[in-house]
Length: 287
Image (cartoon, rainbow, N blue to C red):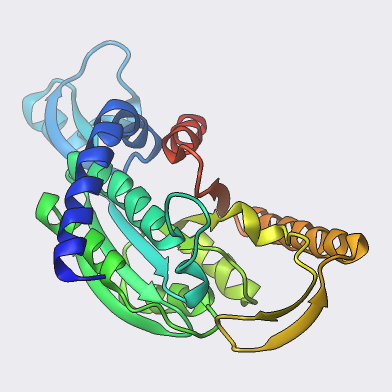
């Protein structure tokens, strides 16, 4: 993608996603993710109904009347966007490639975070971590993240999201909200997913094309794995072969969903032709 095309695409994405984030997502995002805890705000005289445990005994003794500590929520969050740049993400049969769809969703949640004065960071990964943008605030920073996702060189190798999670845990110690974008086509270490989900709020964003699990009848055909280069011949005219392939994909998805559930994480499945804002709105509302 040429630089001028990237700039044009970024502007288009900003226009579309800012409307969605401001109209539907920002309020639900704020309600769903309430920050990291409570911090001291002020001391005021005791009022009927205040909790006894909030009494400031030192000030109460000094002024000989009860005072209580007022606490407020620590609103600021850190959002980390972990984006799979393996070759299978550079694919799509509808209006967008998976990578373009990811950039748009990342922009939408990123602008929601920016609207709440939260920091947003980016990690691009495939078989290893390829690029890191540390968390920062602001619109310009979100635009830089979108541009980075769109302009990344997508790698012909297997994807290892557990490697990205492990890296993030070693570098970013503060509890974060993690959006993990991938098609989850490859194997992973379940232990790392479990550890990461205990330390951070991990939301798996499975981005898929409807053709990922459906092979049409095109006769005896040579297939190549774009990530590993492995080739196989298959008789797609066989109804049994197509059925078995689809069933294997369903079972793989079920196993993935079970692993996220057991890890205290959450997995959302979003089709490249789907209105992702409705999926996110529903999740934020439930959250």
